[in-house]
Image (tube, rainbow, N blue to C red):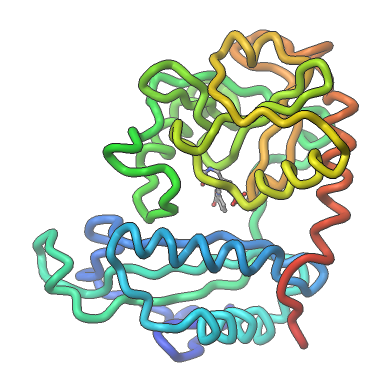
Length: 292
Ligand code: PXG
């Protein structure tokens, strides 16, 4: 027996969890998704992920065929049935099955599936030693083309950047917007620390409004740190005291080198370490508890 997958109202074994080749999620990347962590039996920040999913769906004019309560029940049940206590949930809503044309009007029923499993993004030692990243040529999607706040199934923009990063021998890539301002990485938001203050790009420059980003900002606020959500360039990155990335898959990870420039003294910084430590404490307490 493999994993138990929620698919369109049914719980099915993973070998039976199949989707039509006419599904527009596959044909066009037409759909939305969420990636969510489970920590110690708690679906972390469930409400924020759920709201973001419905907001993304609204932007692309996709009616999710379940209420938020129904989708919560389906997700909790998927986690429960798979006995996932520390793991990862992938919740996907596609436009559904249509014909070989772009028009969503031929797709009467969205497809909904939920996978509860595990995820690892970067090698473990990078969380201790810190990550090296490079800026890549592929720019982040223009908000006027596809707003980066939408967590859509269209990840080619990020995947191209990821490939460019991997081709340069690093695990993660820094993406700029069309004006050269720092946007985010391929699946993570970016933060800088300079003279004790926290900096992150505003989401209108082409960054997802990350749930983990929100957690870090909350923690920094509680610590009384100055927070700047404002545009910055690579200059500010290179000359920062500290740098780190956040994301559901990545969690929070220090960055120690950007475009061959060591950040600060080239080691994970003390403020980064403290914020990451506090983030880890937060994870087991804040979300939807699963009753196994
Ligand atoms: N920016 C982008 C482009 C993302 O895809 C984040 C920022 C961080 O957002 P959250 O809400 O997760 O803090 C993401 C999220 C994967 C994977 O499979 C990637 C993400 C989430 C889950 C899985 O690589 N990225």
